[in-house]
Image 1 (cartoon, rainbow, N blue to C red):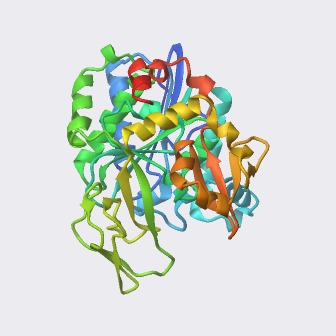
Image 2: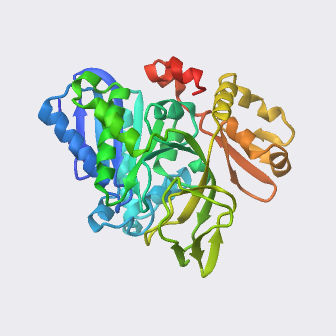
Length: 405
């Protein structure tokens, strides 16, 4: 039942379980950032227990190490942030480099990309991709997803907060690249880097995911309910949806100091001093929740601000997507398809101003400005392989449908 394929070999693979029965292919990543080892440790623990207890598996389960060199060094990255390189353009550029010109993270990306290609070529779906992370500040455990309904529906099964819209602010995360291929992908931030709770939360999340994805039967896991309660209590029973409304970017060589004591999801009033950036005070632009404040030396994001998404808005967005309302957007003046796949809109800046950003968000579109007069609006919904997941119990879950998910 358990083994490692030789053609995947080396330290990249934490573990690989091939079940005797058909089922999903579930891929777990740990250590994409080298100073975040909790996910890697959690994956190891789960694989050990599966082996020792002889737990029956359906389909395949993979555990993949991220930035191996940075993990050994205990640093977020050595040359470049590995979780900001996953765009078609950057991958093509890395592939075209001579071997002696490759940076450390270039090599890591090529290695992971090869492993993913082998898995997608040799395994059958449905595919589930889950990436474990931790934060430099204290935090509730939470999920980050690109805003596709397959991601929403699966994420809602877990008793933790869910963050939408991070793809609008970050370029090149691994899960955004995978989601762009149409597969379900979920990021789980389990706690603070060095906290034992972060490892425990990742272990709990992995067991729940394996059951929800139907790779393992709930009855075969001793303590399933305790894992659920562990996450629920760690998240202080907060399982709301939130949306990112602001990112404070950092440039190379900037001096940035976050004021001490902030925790993710903490409410900050408008005008509160949050940080010092290049010797200037940074204030909260509006009352909102602080999110992932930076308390480490490496990173391109000083902090984010978030707000809770009303249940009515979530219900409305699900309904509009179900009746394929986004397909009518190109009928509006100043709006056209930017590609043949019809997953990206080219929107005139005047139209974008007239149609408030929240409306595009309701329909699943996130923007990335390309020049002064036009905006690219990309939808993960248009590329999602919904047919791969539509037969799954969690996709058809009546309670989820009633709540608009």
